[in-house]
Amino acid sequence: MNKRALRITIALAFVVSLSVRAAESTPTGKRLFLWRIKSAKSTAYLLGSIHVAKPQMYPLDSRIEKAFQGADVLVVEANASPEKMAGTALQMMMRASYPPEDNLEKHISKELFDATISRVAKLGLPAAQARQMKPWLLGMTITLAELQKLGIDPAYGLDMHFLQGAKDKHIEELEGAEAQLNLLDGLSDKQQEDFLKYTLKDVDNIARHVDDMIASWTSGDAKKLEAFLLQAIQDSPDLQPLFVKLFDDRNKAMAAKIETLLKTGKTYFIVVGAGHLVGKTGLLQLLGKTCQVEQM
Image 1 (cartoon, rainbow, N blue to C red):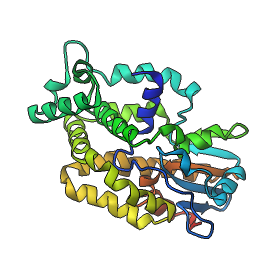
Image 2 (cartoon, rainbow, N blue to C red):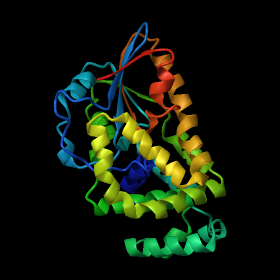
Image 3 (cartoon, one colour):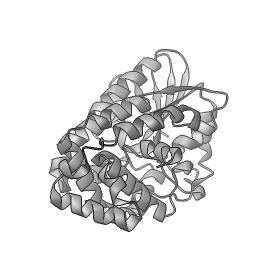
């Protein structure tokens, strides 16, 4: 896997269930998946991000671009620009791969192993290479391949769009690539197996889901997006502990970081995966406890 693919994989780390295709930009006058967060000292614009998209998504609604241009600082989950990710790529491959004496077959059920090898063979990935990947990397690799078949490219994701446009802005990270890698590599065998199992179960539905998902984003419908996430948990109760780790725990940490930033007097434009904004443990609810939150 080349360095570009590795950067893409990190970008997809937490959107396996939220991968959506691009649509027309939001018409002026409609609600956006963008919120204004105000504290006593600072203002932040919190944009729910789509990490993978098509060029037809652009130009974005002018209100989004205006909020970005007026901000002092761009804040992202992890700075995935090429110069920042170059050193992370090799580390990721080393930590996401089993040593020669170990392999995937020793860590997941035979049924899941056989289904995984069958799937990657259809995608053109050598079985020998797949056998050495840990389940979390395999799950993201499979999802990425299916998205590419739909013509979806992370290069057009909102994160990359604003990173490329932030030449004159300071960039802050809520987590950083290393922290995300530590989280993924710290998942237990059971959690990784559940992650891969859900990927194989849901990956054939990506094309069916994309229209509904992008409709939620373009209309600023946080409730609809929340319902999608809850349905995923209801369909696969075993995923609950994994969702807590990938969403709830991270949301608390990100909210605390944002609250710290909002004490500086600066204006921030924050781009975070859309799934982190919604729900009772989402950023909107958490930040609403101490700040004024208003959808734009």
